[in-house]
Image (cartoon, rainbow over all chains, first blue to last red; front, side):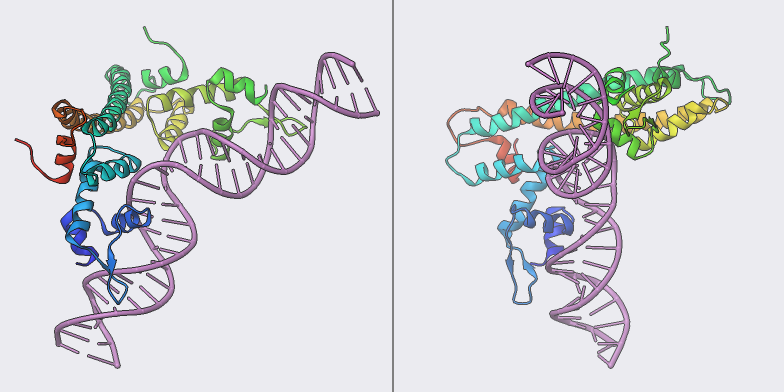
Length: 131
Length: 131
DNA sequence: ATAGGGGTTCTAGTCACTGGAAGGTCAAGG
DNA sequence: CCTTGACCTTCCAGTGACTAGAACCCCTAT
């Protein structure tokens, strides 16, 4: 099938699929006219990638996961290790963002937001501590 | 003062400060030998930038905020608007990450993580729904 | 013959730095 | 005077994961 069909089925933009081929994640066959010809298994790989990416795994992790997926004798502990490390990374990001949100929402709440110039948000960033 | 002192005081790497000059966020004076010579106000700007960046504002937002900071007759509503939009963006990111975390931690919990090959994490990404 | 809607490659841009190379400057010590 | 070492300078390239766009080819229908 053509790239646009593969794109629809995997839920990935054609551009992204070409990029994935570029970096060796998929290797679709080629028609005589040079068009890519995706097999069912290519689409399956792309779908796998779409799901893994949606879970936030890096391309590098995806490469590892694909290899484990293909290896029917892998140990599930290897997969779990990759997932757990990624999970920790996500937790760290959430913690960072929550800290930002808390500080920022506190500042936003304290800013009256009218025509007057005084503003605790700018005060904070300019180094004037609030009580 | 030299860049390394400015770096220490603002808490930003020298490389980052040079980059900020490149994109016009700071414009330190120059000594006759070509070295940058940071004034107290330059350091203040850098500190402002460090704080704003730590709150997750984009460089573009920082530019806007710096302009508002310099404009003593700004309306606090303008600042609040920038901050609120950024806050919404942060909330979106948190929601995305929390969704990822929930899915992923569920999968990780259900993966026994031993020498056997069967693994719900790969099953999920390969499209085998779990009950 | 041509119009359109596919497909192809290639380059360059995104964001906010960061690493590294090649070289100039300055103060202290031998 | 020379060297050492710690500064400083500029410029180029790379990061991650795409994405925009240009220039061009291919296929089908009218």
